[in-house]
Image (cartoon, rainbow, N blue to C red):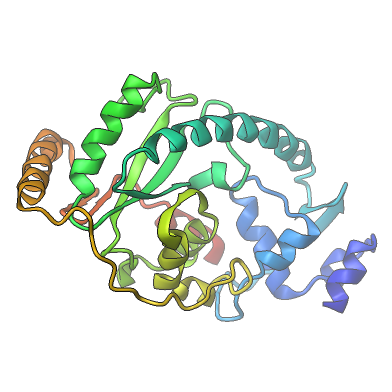
Length: 288
């Protein structure tokens, strides 16, 4: 940590002082126009196992932020996006309070750039929702109805203007929280690490993170994860009629979106609406 401390005091020859893993972290976040503070440089310190290519990365320091040389404009951009993110987060909090009224909603969290305080002005509001066992599609249906009743704008596929609209693009059943092995990489690990919970019933956030402890392989300091003790909780929604309704809810919604599905994940216990895998774009750029 001594080298980081020296850098924080204002030394000019940053590349000689900054460690390789810190340089790589700055380089990664530069892809998202996100300069790092000193504490963030420690938090987002990459694992030594991560490969970013062989060339050195000149890093500059200004006004408390670290960024790639020649990218000084990111300091102003981050300040602007921080204010934008604060406004969007308030919308997310209000929507989360509404969603928390649904008993089967166990967790609501902000994801994506907004979770990092790095949202663009014209961006939407990405939310991850975890539901009770065997009630994902029923909960999803009621969530849309309830949010509409309370006057929230929800993103629609194909629409150009998405500013400040809710994007409910990640749904997970509490029994299906582990990220698929073939989708685990530096990018997805960061996305999971930065999740910002707004509703957290029965320590569901902690359970979600413990199920995905693999993220520490890529970002070992990003989040503290303790082993979550599995409990045999009695589900309040164990009812044959509800099970039938859940099947109907899945069939109805899947039938509606079937013709539009490309790379989205739609199963009885998971709905992930990210047609473009950004990890496949980000990682090659780092390795080049």
